[in-house]
Image (cartoon, rainbow, N blue to C red; front, side):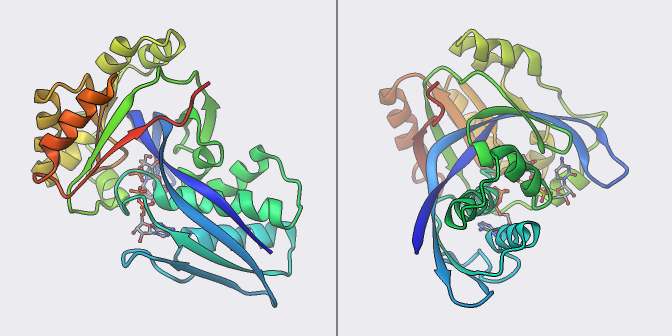
Length: 285
Ligand SMILES: C[C@@](CO)(OP(=O)(O)O)[C@H](O)COP(=O)(O)OP(=O)(O)OC[C@H]1O[C@@H](n2ccc(N)nc2=O)[C@H](O)[C@@H]1O
Ligand SMILES: Nc1ncnc2c1ncn2[C@@H]1O[C@H](COP(=O)(O)OP(=O)(O)O)[C@@H](O)[C@H]1O
């Protein structure tokens, strides 16, 4: 048997850090929404009790370090499944980019194995299981628009953003989420107004949304990688209505209402930045 799952990337519309916790994580408040740039995850049932994983990207490990492997192992343990699975991942989401690609692959494996082995777990149960794999996995189980609290794993669905185009620009550097969190100085960071963003989503007010989006981790990533700040400034100058870094970076996301403007900004950034995409939001509620 073979089945496939789409694993969409996410962007942050906000990311606020409220404080450091005793378990080493940071208490966050962040709004995320899924976009239509996605990995393709194929699941093959195989004889025996093995988990095999392969991804067509040199930066992604093809062993038990792969988040998709971890998801399959967690699923088999939780539901006491003795079957084997081969996971093949077509990577389209840039790696270590702040776009949640690995987390989305893990979430896709949980959803897919739930179908393949007819376990009948609810999405809430899969999200709870996913929280043990990574902070972003619960969001990726739903891949809509949501507020993430705790260390990001507590998910509350929000109203969908107004339809828009998003330019994603990723410079050729990978960012370690852990190292960015380690360097935060809580006294120095900016705090986006999460409630204003939620209100803008509820009112489908594009300009208020763009005026309020923001990411507390930008200060840290910009100081380590000034190129990320340059890309943000270029997008603002080029006329994007709202611009912020996604997650811990280095991808910068620019929001615009019309495709023609997205295309102009895209053309201006290519040649200056290695990977540039125009994507749309997945959440069309
Ligand atoms: C900050 C976000 C925003 O989406 O960054 P990106 O990965 O997208 O850049 C995510 O929540 C990341 O989630 P994820 O990539 O799953 O990270 P995890 O494996 O849970 O955490 C990696 C490491 O980052 C630090 N960490 C992560 C989340 C958090 N709320 N506080 C932290 O301090 C911890 O040191 C942790 O060991
Ligand atoms: N299936 C996977 N896809 C991408 N990266 C993975 C995967 N499994 C493990 N990783 C590792 O996880 C790290 C973060 O990857 P990724 O999820 O792309 O970053 P981010 O959370 O910044 O979007 C990388 O070091 C990568 O090698």
